[in-house]
Amino acid sequence: MDGRITSHEIERAASGWVARMDRGPLSAEDNARLQHWLASDVRCRGALLRAKAVWLQSESLRGTGQLHELHTAPRGTVSRPPRRVDPRRQLIFRWSGAVAASLMLAVFLFVSVPIPTAYATAKGEMRRIPLSDGSTLTLNTESRIKVYEDHGRVRVKVLHGEVYVEAADSAMPLQVEMDGRKIAATAAEFVVRRLDDQPAQVVVRAGRIDIPDAGVATTLAANMRLAVPAHGGQAVVGPLTDADMQRELAWREGKIAFQGETLADAARSFTRYSATRLVIADADLASEPVTGLFATNNPAGFARALAASFGAQVRQQDGEVIVSRR
Amino acid sequence: MSCPTEDEPARNGLLDDVERTQWFLQYILPHEPALRAWLGWRHSAGFDVDDIVQESYAILAGRERFDDIHNPRAYLFQVAQSLVVRNIRRARIVSIQAVEDMGGIEFADEGGTPEDGAIERDELRQVARAIEAMPGQTREAFLLRRVHDLPQREIAARMGLSESTVEKHIARGIRWLGEWAASGGNRPSRTSRQWNRTTRQGNGRTHNQS
Image 1 (spheres, rainbow over the protein chains, first blue to last red):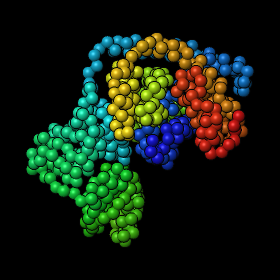
Image 2 (image 1 turned 90 degrees about the vertical axis):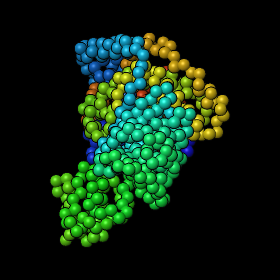
Image 3 (image 1 turned 90 degrees about the horizontal axis):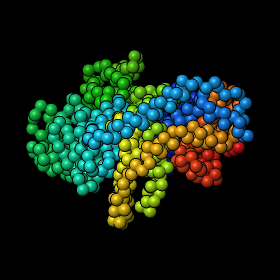
Image 4 (image 1 turned 180 degrees about the horizontal axis):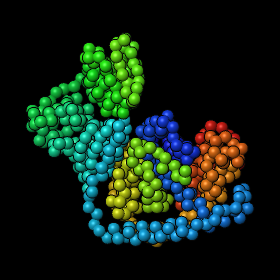
């Protein structure tokens, strides 16, 4: 394929991670690296699941009769006697398989009904979800969606958060629902945003999308934004510049972009991504405007940047980062 | 600590519990050789089989639940097929014929259940044979870890190796077993030369080549 990492390298990394986890609990730093790796390519999650399964499979060797075969083999190098076989464990192992198999048969008799699959991201997490019609969703931090897949027709319900949708060029348009409003998209890229303290928004980056019941427009073209106030107000459509668009999508690179927001608002934005609370201690400092691009996972770094440019001081206590005038 | 998954923080996302891995091991992994064979026949469509397999598993890993998958084998093949079709669309170089080629497959469960039974009966023997075939020190470390249930730290002391070397042997062993799972336990799916090459890259040095 293109210049991306090979599946072989991913497989090697996945095995490495399972071995590392077996060695002992991951350090915070390792865990961050693991998360970063998982987010780096959609295949990583699959490879990790597989490596875990392979590892789990070999666990069943412990305390089984199969050991004997290994130990009597001519090339065996381990001289310790095998452990006593635990017959109870063996029995459970055998029975659980039989029960599971018969359950599967029983379930198989029923006609399958489309059941939505729910996806969610935790604070600071980002996730890519390929859909069966070839579309891809990218979930930003603290997002919740449901996906209904039924005979090639895919419907996505955005319950909360921020989702970047890359709708495939397929015969059936991808349907995205938010607050009961329906969006139909084919070969388009757009952001759907439903956050507690903001109007619901749809921002189109490429292609065009149809919103039959939007009230103001039925089609939203690239570089346009639709905002729908929470309490039934008038929907507003407006154009976006390239720079606006880059800010809108900065989160996909793990960045957060500010353009003249107050420090108070900026600090609040960080709480979406991190458990560390950022407190601006002085009211006049809190109303200062801030512009720049910052890493979403590093509120402390943001605070230090503030300190440097506003001559403020930063201290950390009890999971809070406090910025105040000197 | 017998299983690594238990120690992962919950915020790693979904699928971090033994049950889900167990489900995957029981209902999906046994079908991998068949999936690979099926994908292999369609190789001309211009995609990498390993990519499709990994991405299919990623989609499974992303599911919140497995209990709504009534026929795991059929589900796995459907997911893989949708990815292949997507790749074909992306590549835009493949003729219409290749897409049509994807159409008429049945996800036949031919011998699905009996096969499962056979795999279950044979599984331990297979794993035992695969470990037996591992290169020297990797095999010893793997046996001490999996059969004798010694922690990596103790294995390191016993074998006179650093802990990180033991960790690498374990990782290598997992990949080795992964190769066996890919091929259905009959033969290593890659040549030993390839294996050595990738292993060397993985370790970053060339020690312990049995």
